[in-house]
Length: 293
Image (cartoon, rainbow, N blue to C red; front, side):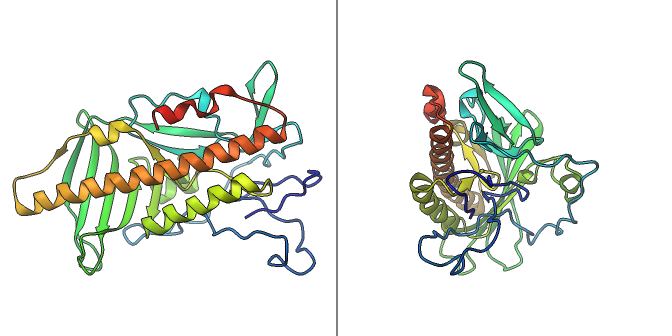
């Protein structure tokens, strides 16, 4: 959560990458939970995963300070109208190198710390059995393009075997703790949802807050979006009983990712609309991406 004065004397900062960003300059009278302050669930990237080593401390070599937005610059928005999602199965997000980017020349629209997508194109999906620490059923669904694996979706079912997806990890080939720590790849190259249903529900609550408050900021660096291309992929399995179970669980996984995608896109649109209103701009094409996502 972030608290931002309406007069923008102290604009929100983005020194911590996550879904909610910004910080109060000091604690207000009565504390952060006093009357008049809204509280959002924490939306920060995962700090670890059962199958991955914890990331080492982040470091920067001669890093520039984050650009402070002004009353005439949008802050950390995802300019969806500049990107095309046709043909991509998934897309994750990252904040680019801090700086002011001109999104539109006339009338001039600028954004500090713009958010950009990483598009994942795939033409197939292959299944493998996966062991889990709890002993529950696990699946590895590898998205491929040609003979290359472009993304892995690791799925854990609930430990009580009630045929329900519990945990989803989306891993891009470029991910490693070292490459993330060195800023060679974005932290969103690994997305872990320990309770995917709770994550989706928290985004739905956040959308309401974004639509009613100008003091909360959002960047989708802990989420993803998907398109119909993901649903169209044909799953390759063997003809065993386990293969039939995998096909059923893959269908459930796609449904959950589709819900996550819609909730993420709703939050992106709500925050973009809020920021454009604040700086006195209107972009007609701002919601056109929803025809694909």
